Amino acid sequence: MKSIRLFLLLGIGFLFGSQSLSALTPDDKGKVAAQVKQAVEAKRFTIDVDRVIPSGMKSRNLTPSYTFALKGDSAQSYLPYFGRAYSAPYGGGEGGVKFDTVTTNYKQEYDKKGNATIRFRVKTEEDSYEFFLTVYTNGSATINVSSVNKQAITYYGELVFPPAALPAAD
Image 1 (cartoon, rainbow, N blue to C red):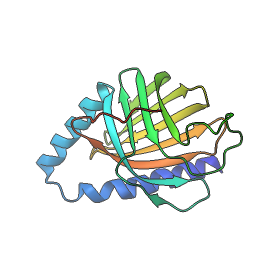
Image 2 (cartoon, rainbow, N blue to C red):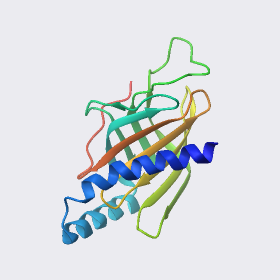
Image 3 (cartoon, rainbow, N blue to C red):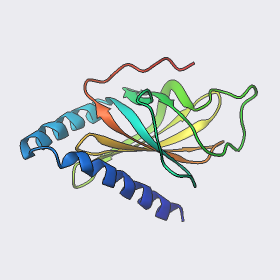
């Protein structure tokens, strides 16, 4: 059941990602793909997140202020959370997937089309998260997040060139 959900979410991400690809010339596609690969290889990129699909809920459009960034061995996340929390920290916590911390178990690989798949874990005071990112050659990205204390959630967005600074996580 989980694999069916993962394939469905990846398929939806590819559908949204392929829309912006059609407007580019072949030369532009190559330049964008090279920029994307360079950013992924350097582990330095920012994703502006514009859509979220919580588990078992309808997708929602987001305001442009939500971002995720990978900067070397650290990840910065300023993302909302919609869904069921199995437990919450005393006082209510951060109210989203918000942190600036070191990543662990980082793995990166490419498929035949040049799309990058990135996996890593993050541990915060509130929760432990496992991230599964797919960064497509056209600059679109899918972020699947599973957590110990919350239902899984999926975000969609676009890479920003050059990487933008994130708001400070409270």
